Length: 336
Image (cartoon, rainbow, N blue to C red; front, side, top):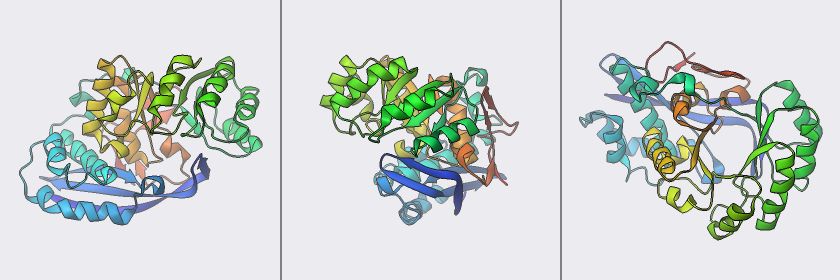
């Protein structure tokens, strides 16, 4: 077994702004595992909000290299368990490794990941397309640039309702909004009423991530379903979100990869909650992995590679009417 990795800069088509950060280039770490004539790819982008950079990701991978290359691990779940202490402070690095392990493992099985998971690719929901925070005029222009049936609109400004009102004038598409922790309890409840009238499907993460008490009230009084993102990072958070959110958005990079994400999705389903997997502006490596999980989800946000002006990888094709999987086994991604 051989472990290697390399860094790619992902240039964005437009400056991408959410409530707590902006960026024009997203750097990402690609992990490669090679064994017995097969290879697997995994990916994790950096994120200053969570204190994750290339240096601390590669430092954790190096700390775990000996186990990866010399231990006779049989499957991705076993490798994940072996690494959970080493990667406890850096789930992003563990995600990239876990994704590569799943890609390698399913290639050795001669199967696509969705086949191994016994999922029907035709059941994958349509992805939303994200409109980052900008001037209202530029947000309208971004939306009109890409004709899509579902838009996720990033909010967290002083004129959030004005943004949605103006965007609604230009499309009949379904809207989803993501406040990224920016609202108060009163704002969330009041905004939900008009947002429902404006054709919004649900609100994602309206309150700060640790305000579970406040979310109990929003959950009861909101006119719209509410979805957890920042409040649901790891497996232990799923139960905390039950009775406070109607749905959870699992991010592979924040959870630590496909292995824990599968457990989180199943736990949420057992609790009667709806599920989504979201992206973190990955290339087609990370997006392809998400796509293989999509058939088990109610919603999916896998538009990350569509936001790039130059994608260094090839994989699934995310389209307004669905997703096209390549014929390659594993997650189906390869570097260009």
